[in-house]
Length: 362
Image (tube, rainbow, N blue to C red; front, side, top):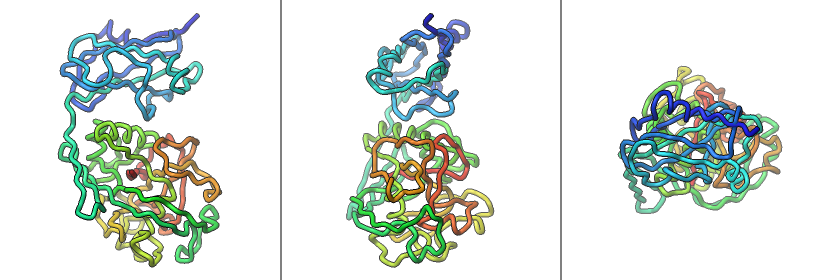
């Protein structure tokens, strides 16, 4: 017998449908259990204002949601859905599996979220005179992307790094095309504007967002790209180290990003008081990037490999596969060794830790 029990519809019949509370918010949550599932799910909700509506799903009890919107949907979903009661979304997950490559684990419950943005956010983009910095302003919240020129460098345990882990060896040459990198890690202010909620362990507008998994970061990026019509992504590990070394602006190699004196450029275990710090509290490196070392580890779009020089990923616009992903830079609890520009680390892609955040690339 086909299995389907649609929790959202039961909730609708017993308690009424969900109302929109605020823009950029989750307006409805539910669970399609594996008990009696049909090919098509139907979700009912109320909408007080015209809105852009999307449906997202999760296969791990709602901890992480797929970092892209579903495709095999119809009804009251997408751009400019009209306000009204009993709005209905239909999702054919069999078509999603067949045509879009979404793999639904056998016997799993499907958690879902209906999200709505009732008013388009204002977006302004400005370039400086030299086109070296792009400033984005979304509803008054500003962040900057710094231009990183193309070049070639030696990646890994170079002489100034001192004693290194074997995963940083051997030193190998890497060539990169130009790209943009976030002036700072993504702040809680920007995250909350885009996502509607703040998962961080300690709250503060100018603190880096933390407690976000690799997949959480990509979900944020998918929303941000929808708002800005840009192509933001996570940096490749090779891009991150290239920028941390301030190449090509600085030809004198340093142990940390911007200096051999750690107290000048980063928050780490000996000067942070064991606490997360606001972005831009230390001096930037020679490219104008802040906190490349210390404060929070930063996700890179590479799956973890001990032999990274042979398995390095080129910059990609989609999240990489793999159960573990690379983090770089060290954090506010780290030793100096963990904060070196060549030091590498990894966490499971689904882990949410107060010591991990991320930085945008483009």
